[in-house]
Image (cartoon, rainbow over all chains, first blue to last red; front, side):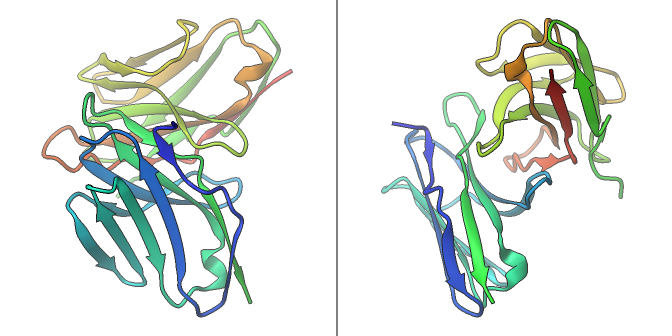
Length: 111
Length: 114
């Protein structure tokens, strides 16, 4: 089992709809969770961090964390073509604080 | 507020050569982590520097080494380059206090080994 797993996609979502990106992790004592956006040929950009169970909202983005299910998700409301990118889930491992990334999910917003 | 900077932007080296990549952290940050990102993959952790010492290391051979300077800037050195070392090398900076652990990436250095 990979430490951080994401569906590689591509995930195609119509403009204006909600995009839902999912991530599971294997280290049960992980403490911190991050979502990064990466445009093609660019470096990752931090868009959300979440540390406790529940939802955290920031503008059109909502991160959801369920530690019991070892699951973290990112919702993007009112999707725009500019949201088309690869979204990377990252988890701070509990046993040594290393931050481990998933392979990313490619999101394509259809105009 | 200056963000994370890296140099050079692109680099082409020949197999067997050595390379040095440089990183300056975001203003106020004291911790630097280096990642390797191959095409279509997520960033892979190489190592992290804090207080001029390597604090953590990922599953990379000893050919990969680093250094952190008193001004918190950092270098990544790779010896005896292999074709498989071709990748985007990312530097991320963070603050070593509190429980945030938020990391901010620089623009990266694209290394091509021929």
